[in-house]
Length: 308
Image 1 (spheres, rainbow, N blue to C red):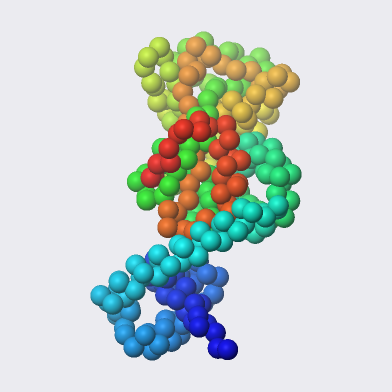
Image 2: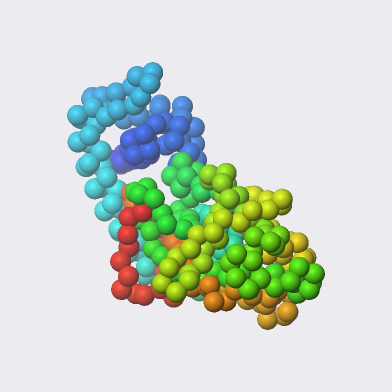
């Protein structure tokens, strides 16, 4: 008996090209080459007897037949995906792979215990972890999930907030013995500050303070600038090179050990959000959904997902 649906690989190739906007981006998503996808779509068009994609030297577009076919195959693949999720949900152990990208702050200080908890529950799931301060392109680079810092732009991604991380100002005891302890925000101008240059803009990140009900964004200046890895400012501060602002979850232990001292506690109160994001059209595996559940376990169960 011949296989009725032996062309589904070609349908998936068309779906990837249509959703990602080009053969190149679709090939990245499917871990193949653009030429392979081009041949697959040509085969599918020949089978259907209709042109699905309108190809020009500058852009790729859907024909009317292609648009209608895309809507129908999306529905069909969604049904197949739901059937797979139901079947996986009945297994004693989840299997599969999840590609996750996180910033260095979260990757070194927040994520390890969460991943350990996930690994104990689902030992057969393979996690491919990318730790970087660069915002990866989830679709083009084939990531299932990413953790992002700060207010998220309207990018079309689905976002679930993980936490609002508190900020504080610190310096080493040795630095304070030599330079004195600042008592006010104006005093900081006479101290060695350790600014961080944002990789996305090339600009110095402002320090965030709260004076009563007022939010203050203060721009540090220094002869020493740190870029790429924000954890570098904490390392420099611990070695007495100046004052830095960081997250409580990073400096909590050094403060407890006496390696760092908190400064200007009367101006604390500001936070920055960390969120987990994923593409809304990407079919999430049971393993990816289980990882999201572990990462968001500390957030309110009633908090709705938002489009970032």
